[in-house]
Image (cartoon, rainbow, N blue to C red; front, side):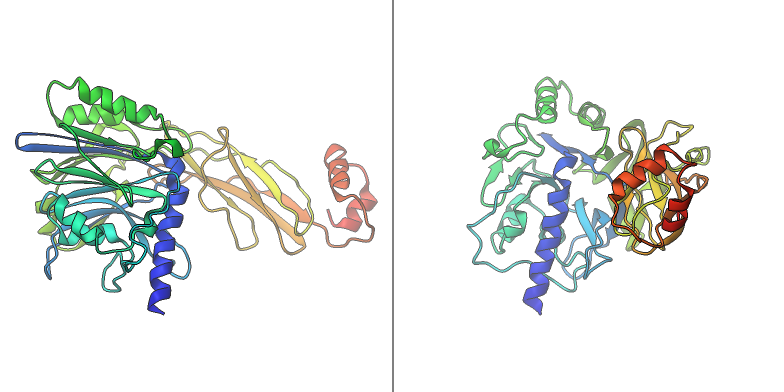
Length: 408
């Protein structure tokens, strides 16, 4: 049973980062004298992130970790750690890559600890027990790294040492800075290269005249993503002072400053990322249009619906379709500027499909007017059903007898 849990835990991480490959995050670090800064953009299609704080205890360092919910059965409440910093000034962040299975450690055990909050995560464990990059490398050397088939990890400490662990290979920092995106630097031929975000960060670090939080913020701004996988949040970490400068949805004029040492005095606690930035004057999206799509269909056949609205503040919008059968679409990104979702009903009957919108601050619109959708109650003839649907759509007031037979 324990072996199964270990394998499932590794699969969780694999699946998350496999899906996260298109999200295209960016990380970079620079060190000089007694100052080490790290910057990163975290790009994803879900806006639900938390920052969790763990005070030092039981030979573990105090630390903060960004996480998001990754509900994969049989562990639907598992929170997936993404990046963090401990009270020794050690930092890590994960970056998805093309697939490359590590093989040099396959004979070693997977990391698993049922007493660890992130019980499957080798990264969170290393952050809790290590203070330097060298110590991190010793920890990784003890475990099987097959779970890293589709991601790599940037580690940085207060001495300025940094590495990118790619699984079998380790890329050490050369010079004053190091940059990581979503290609494997020892195997760029596998994909993701050349990367404009990587080149932009390198070029800006090359011409930097003064190491500062402000300049690192400008690099985050220059490398941030929009569209389907936007930069949900950006970080600048000052590892020596243990301070995090946090930005939300590439608004680099609004910063939340988090002092790790002060936060750890509050005990274990968690912040919902949105709550740190939402303001009382934010307005929810407007009421979405009535869903547009088939008003009748066939049980077991997928139907697609669209809807659209705008946000008075110009914020990005997610959509939620309610299918009136006890299920919904979940919050989804817009497609070509509108909400679009598909559904397959399993029972005949009449349904009221409706949709609402939510902005990046979780303020929700009212529900749209419902669209009445009917599934056929009977099928007496072996028709070409697609043709029948086209006829009903094309001539909405014709064929009353057929409409009666099919319950539409």
